[in-house]
Amino acid sequence: MANKSPRSPILPTSQTGTRVALPPLSQSPATALSNNPTRLLDAFDAYVSTRRSSGAQPDPIDFLNQHYSSEALLVAQLPNIRDAIGDRMNRLDDRISTALQRQSDSAEVTQRHVQEAKASVASLEKRIRLVQEKASQSEQTVREITKDMKRLDCAKRHLQRTITTLKRLHMLIHAVEGLRQACLLQPYPDYKSASHLVDATRLLLKHFDAYTQKVEPMRLLAAKVDDLQAELKFSLVRGFRIVNFGAEQTKQMEKKGKYKSLVDPEEDVLSGVGEKKDDDAIDEVEEDEAPKKPPPPKMTPEAMAGGILLIDAIGKEARVEFMTSFVQDQLIEYSKIYKPVKEQPKEKPRVSSFMAQPEAPKEDTKPEFSLEFIEKRFLWFRNLLSEIQKKYPNVFPSYWNLEYHLTKNFLRRVSPFSAKIDCR
Image (cartoon, rainbow, N blue to C red; front, top):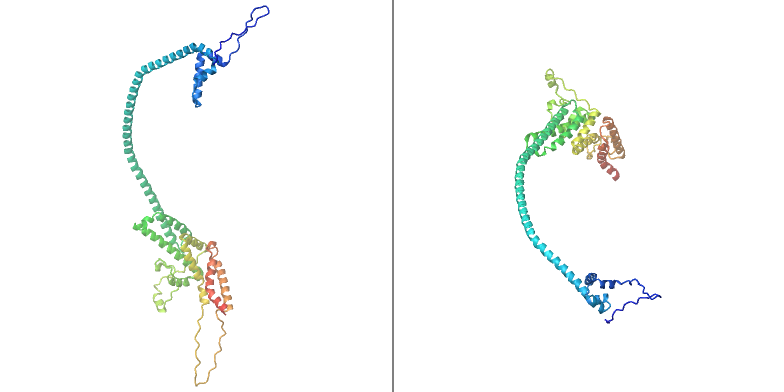
């Protein structure tokens, strides 16, 4: 730097020769910092922090050149700067000594606090162990109490199940007894009430499926229900047949059919109906013989409708079986009227010495597969449908499709003869 001495500013003079005092010129920020060593040190600290944060090394010479325009100014301010640095170092030494003194004073307090904390932790651990022991004792006490409660709860559940089972058993026995009473009504069972009882017995027996094969009384009760249902189906088939064919033909059909009654033959309502005796036997027992039982009356449409409800309650298999039997019964007359005629073998003409007899005129017969017979068959079937509507009004529900099953079975019997007509 150039060593130039500062020049004092020239003061203007007035016309009278006296000097006029002018205000000092405003100083720049760098000049203000150079004249104040404390602020200069603070600016240097900020300068060092800024340079280090930006990744550059601080340059003290560059910092001094920014704040001192000449070496003389720097030399002039060195005593003040040295005093400011010394004062700052003294303050720093005082702070360090004060901190060390406080640290030495607080060491004993800290040690005492550490000991107290250790004692508190030991006391807390002791209390936690005591609480754990008391919790274990309480848990054991609760287990002993709940053990008895669990036993009582288990006994309560078993008792409730037992009571429920006894109620269901009572309801089952009552339903079976009601079914038996409905089956014993004369002249025909109460089929409508029996249909509800059949549903009830089926639902109740499902709860005892596990005991049906193991417990003998339950097995006998289930077998009794099956027997009552079979007897109801038998009496219903009999009632429908009596409406259609009468008592005598019904008895003949029962001898050949698969439906059998479980009632004692002597107590059967059709016992003695249609039986023929010799005249001698009639004369011998005429005096001692009791009056014959009158044949049972025909079922009313309401009773037959109740029987249909019973068949539906028993199940789909019972409905199919009853429908098949009914359709076959209705087509019995068709099989008798249009029974196929077997061709008789032709006899060879006999040669005799006697006078030849005139041949008998041949009957003008038509084959059963002729068109006329086919028309008669369909006319007969149409009359059958009309008779069924008259004999069984509002008995069969629409979902049974009675006419469909009748027509299907009728066409099965007609189809072979229609095939013969096609061949002709």
